[in-house]
Image (cartoon, rainbow, N blue to C red):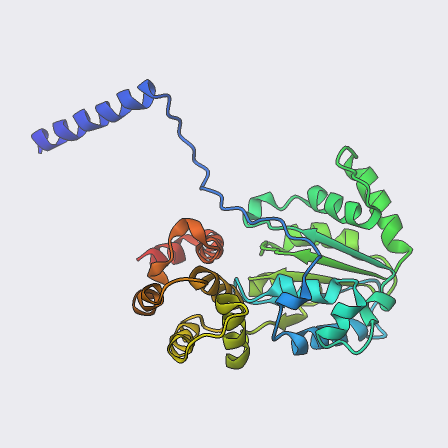
Length: 318
């Protein structure tokens, strides 16, 4: 035992020497995997299969209880990669041709809300749910002018003035916090505006959806099999007409994507213009074929993994 301990101590001493020698430092913070900031714009020509969801969500925004005072809240909830942000963009986007093409019979959103705002929250680390930063993003979206240099009081005064004068639609994209106290610190600044105002929150967490407003939730599901195949063919083949063999392989690949649009798009993009041997390789190896640095699927998984409780992280890793 003494000999074993001595060897361990010698090894640790070597590590300590190299630690000083190369100027390493201890960083107790976990590695952050940030998400690219989203915006309200969407090219509707690239989106298929969400007509019903758009119409359902718009219908919810048009309905308000007579007892409600101030703004209303609804969360669009679902796993990563389903297209929660895309659904919010389709509802939010101001181009009337977009609204008609994806299933809305009129320009209800555009005519109903005199003020529309978009703020990408992306607080995958719950310790970084900074209310002032979020309010600055909302205010900037409302006025078109940056207020980064404002104090918290100036920000909330300017924002509340904007909200009080309008029936507004606000999208808070990619909210992660499950801490109700944290959320309420933000929510209290939004409970103004006219009674037909709405805040739409997109989130992967059902717990987040429960603490937002009255817990009203729109659960987003995957695409239908037909739409999944159409999306894959559009991404993987473009304007080309695939052979029967490629179509058959593509159907098998789509089945592995679990009707998740992100997975379908990433795989389709990877296989676009590839040789038949590459298609067979993916058919055999599945998602192991995808490298870490060339796609968005593992980024989505990493963000979800980062948010898990420690026991679940261990279970997932195992």
